Amino acid sequence: LGLLADREVLPDSPAAEAGLCTGDLLLRIGNVSAENHRQLQGIADVVRGSIGTPIDVQVQRGSSSSSEAVEGSSGVLVLQLTPHSWSGPGVLGCHFKPYPS
Image 1 (spheres, rainbow, N blue to C red):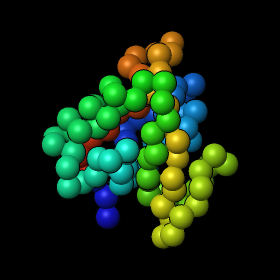
Image 2 (image 1 turned 120 degrees about the vertical axis):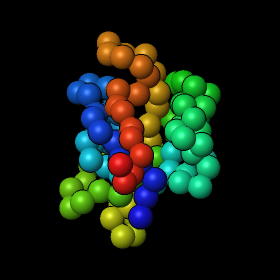
Image 3 (image 1 turned 90 degrees about the vertical axis):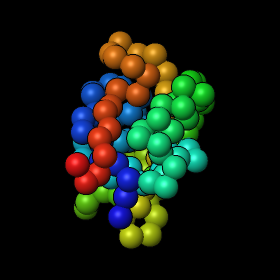
């Protein structure tokens, strides 16, 4: 159903603030989807160009949900992720891998 699954969401990171959870299946981040992610380079481009600006992120999640998420159809959640500097590595605080790996 999706493009990528995130491997790890670090506590207190921008990804955690947005409500992303380890194991979420990433369907879309900004205008990047399974059709145009270019070996994940599309995600890096969107993130670099959006420091300090919220990005709409669509994820597929099992049965859990976040209070910050807007429930869509078929278990699809729409989150707002704002890349920014924080005490950990990078500007997201999560890692992605191709799905299925």
